[in-house]
Image (cartoon, helix red, strand yellow):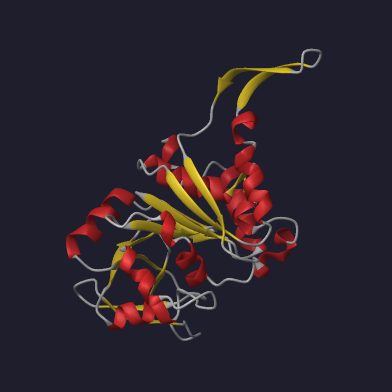
Length: 259
């Protein structure tokens, strides 16, 4: 199953870091947050990724181009211009990097990678700035159980995100922008989607979190998988500092692969 990661935005709320690199390449414990996200999926056996690039796309391409070398013990024979690999600690990942445009919105990025997705199975989707200890196997099982087009991992957190109205059957009846008065369940990413959801996206200027998800919800095709564990996104410099503090104190609930 393919995992799509949205990694093309400008990261304007964390400009202290993102003016140098794309937000998914901002490091936690000397590894980009993108690497942490991919490790979460890999822990559950999902190792095929399609990464939607945009802002400073070349930096993410260079990270993966050099990954094998950077995770190996090597001997360089400069006189013979030879390189010998001794040990390699790289991941079992197959990564497709797609430049989906500098100014393309999230919906447009998903639409642009349509040809990289199989027609006969759903795909997973998440953002390049959020970490959680979601049980992705149970998430997928839940998605397959209800026969709807889309499942969103819902997390209960007040703040600055899109609010979800969820009924007793875990159906999302409304997907709307959050106001200061709203609190409750929000979109935590970590979605499972049928390929038909791409038909709800008109073009590059469409934000997936607005018309597409709203229309999917109105059609009764959007379900919520409620996650009660750890979830946090890196939206600001303060969020990054908190992640670093958690890493330094070994308080890393998203790192399920080390447990």
